[in-house]
Length: 305
Image (cartoon, rainbow, N blue to C red; front, top):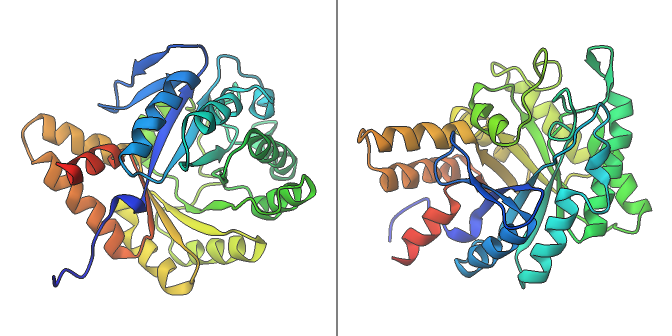
């Protein structure tokens, strides 16, 4: 009765990795219990996710073919576009969110168009806008730009409005840090940069005031939800963001955070379900309204047992 913080299933968003083909389901070695799935399998999985009461999923695409410009990212029948259509046909009210970025689609693994060995911010905005509109046209319920280019929320908002999708919400990765905890995701999504790193456009882990500036800019540009990523090492940032805005705040409990808990549990060093509950409670206690987490299914199943 007296608990100050409660985590419920309807706060959770489950990430899904979607690959090309049919009938495909492949385990991701770095993330126990998480698989790559083709669109048909992902749609079936989403039926089970919806039945557990999880309100939404966020999709990350893994195309077979990649090139310098990430040309497949806005293909009307690309891996994400087909997955969105299949999932919407299979579910009734599940919220389908799409990651808007280029790193999974580019041969170099960076999040935008290159000019030499540097990402060209303004050229990238054009491509991100095209990708967001293609996701909306496929039936997505929300787009989530994760690239960290300057001005991308405003560019995507304008493109969606011009394309007839003025009601499409944007969940912005507003404060995305250059973190070591993304390692397992990059293997899962095959998006490790072929050279350099992403510190030129992702945030320095030592900065908090910068995060607040980034959040304020995205809000001014039209973001409907702002996100902090990662979550566990940045609970103070989540709390500071919560104090500065009345918008919904999301936090991404990322792959490395998930993998290290799973690894410790497999070694018998801690109780997995209690660790999961404590982690999700900490993220909610810090101020997050929504939590993107690979634990979503396990948490939902535990609530029903």
